[in-house]
Image 1 (cartoon, rainbow, N blue to C red):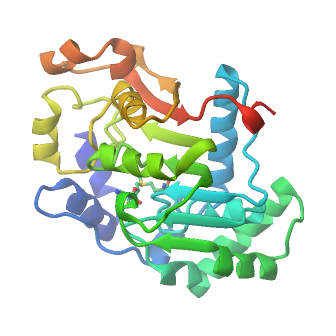
Image 2: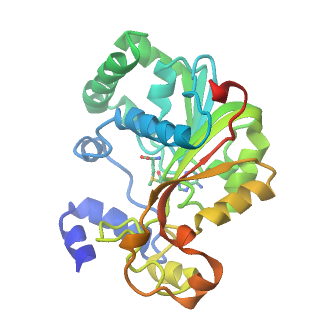
Length: 297
Ligand SMILES: C[S@@+](CC[C@H](N)C(=O)[O-])C[C@H]1O[C@@H](n2cnc3c(N)ncnc32)[C@H](O)[C@@H]1O
């Protein structure tokens, strides 16, 4: 019973958050607290966003010409940045003119909480200095965050983010949005030819099971979502590519982790009729802007 043992390893609050997301009829989790975030091995490490970016850009560069994203003077948007502003501090440190995001669970008090400032932001800043050079001291960094970050506590599809943007990012969000089409329509409204984008999508079950596909394909997606709640939309990589194409966005799909040999459990006919093994057993994929202009640095 790996899922039960996973739940038992969590704090009661974390368990409640997951159950609230998973159980139909109980939408939304409890709000985050600073102490909960600072004791999370995932959320307490801001530099993980630099690590994610470096890894993802390296994977993209295996498939097409891809110069590192240049944030200097750029207008940057992230979908669903999470409780501590996601890629925002990194983008601002690297010179972004502005960073905007829409995050339904956003609470601005968290990034100002003394424990977050003194641990998360201070360490994140020190790590950014080590990685990208002494571009700004901590006081300047904090001032820049205060003036250049703008995060809306709502879904991206309805966020007041308008006009052309230079860079769009998301990290494990496109598999959580309902419906994806509204999110991609919003992207189409703010993207122009020069916009560079990088979205990481996780197609796994989001449980720490032996295979990330455990239980995922035993029934059609509607039945899975009915039973587990609106946590993941169960769209596969080709669906995301189709949605981008339908909205006139030229995008390249790059597998970042294929696990065909790792599949387990039965695959219902519904899935077999619609998807090949590549689509079924690619756990991580990147959806990126095609090589052009400054991307081919
Ligand atoms: C797995 S978390 C990833 C958070 C963050 N990107 C990270 O990597 O830490 C998924 C995030 O998507 C957000 N989300 C869900 N639906 C959204 C929507 N319609 N628009 C923007 N964000 C959304 C959730 O609130 C949540 O913070």
